[in-house]
Structures are given as structure tokens and as C-alpha cells.
Image 1 (cartoon, helix red, strand yellow):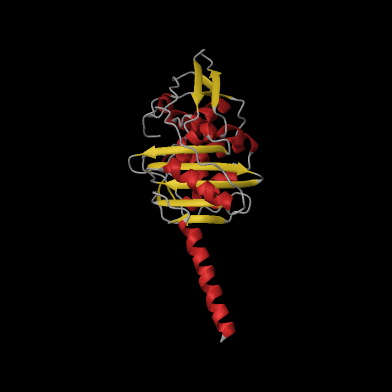
Image 2: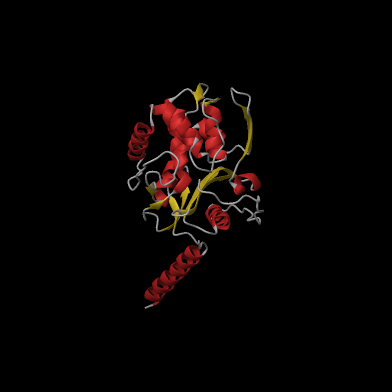
Length: 284
């Protein structure tokens, strides 16, 4: 009888701990995932395999494909089609030239749809062939619920569809590349085109700009997708990836997810109030 009572009490204690742990994170997202970037273990999920439009989180794939398949020091001639992509934009001009590396910074920091199309045309010769590369790469890295139709994340010809868990896998893969890691964590980048046009791009990701342990990330927004966000955090040798899809409260949710994730390893991190950067949402 005594052993049975001890067993019941132990079970109830374990249940309470489990309920408490699961209650430590609540997000406003339709789908979310928190991953240990080193092991691939998911520490928190919410509808992780629900297929949703991902907006400009697409550009993580566009960037890593370009880095892996082309010389980023080469000059890229901007086509009229690329320059005419709708905002968000880095405002490149038809016939002007930037290096592929420059375009990658404009792609990740400012989420330039014009940069995405210029990159796709340069790397694969045309956008359709680049999209085929995107879907091949998605399968190769285990993104089993993902389909890309364009390199930007706009709904041209239709929205790119993925899941929170698949995007986390993509971010995990991309961040293993030194150049991608450098670009996605840069706060400000300056360059000049072949025609002498100066550019200065600030990272749209507020956590990268304002929180020391958030070292890289990518933003996204369309009317169909809502706000999408991928963030990479590092503290005391522990690396975490947070992804939210269709989340009106994404900055706070990512900080709370990271606080919870790091706490599992006995690491305390602050969750500071995030300042507005004054920018307006545009489809990116």
C-alpha cells in the first residue's frame, strides 16, 4: 500500500512538473517551433506541421542556395523584371550592377523582393529553374511539408507554403554556413552600385538589433501570411531557433520562447521591451 501511494504521488508530481513546463510558453502564433539548433530537438511546438504561407522567410532558402551555388563576389546585372518587383525593395535600377554579396545583404536585411529575383535570375538563369532548385533543396534537408513557387515569398504566382518545423530545419541548415551566418547577423551594411548609387541597409529584425543573445534572423509579412519570423539565439554554448507563423505578437513571443528554452539548460536571459523602429509593414 505504501509503495502504491509513493508511486501515485510521484506520478502526480511528474504530471505537475510537465504541466508547469508546458505552460511556461504561450504564443499568439498560428504555428510555432523552438529548436535546439545543435541537436535538432524541438523544445516547444504549436501546430508545428500545419501548412501555412511563410512570406519572406522564403529568402533564407534563396540566400543559402546563392551562397552554395555561385561566386558571391561576381557582379550581377539587374534586369527590368527584377527591378520592377513590388516592395519591400532595395530599389535597384535596371541595367545597374551590384555584387551577388551586396544583393544577399539587401535580401536578408531589407527583405528586397527585387534582390530575390535578381539573385534567382543570376544563379539559375531564370526564376523557374531557381524555384526548382529551391524545392530540390527543401527535400534534401528534410522539409517534407514545403513547396516553393517563387524566390521572394510574395504571392507571385502563389504563396510559398511551409510549416514552423520545416522553417526551423531550414534556419538550422543555413546557419551552419559561415557566410549566411555573417549576413543574417549584420545590423548595418553599406555599399555602392556600379553606377555609383550608394546603399545603406539596416536589419529589419528588431531582436537582432536590440537583444545581444539574438544573433541572426529573418522577418516576413504578407496579408495572407501575416507576420512571420525566424530568430537564432546563442548563450553559454546553447543555440536555439525560434520560428512563428502568422503571429501578431512575434517579437515578445520569440523572447518568451528563448527565455523558456534557455531555462531548460539552467541559463537565465532577459526579455527586454523591444523598441519600435518606426517602420511600416509592407509585403516582403
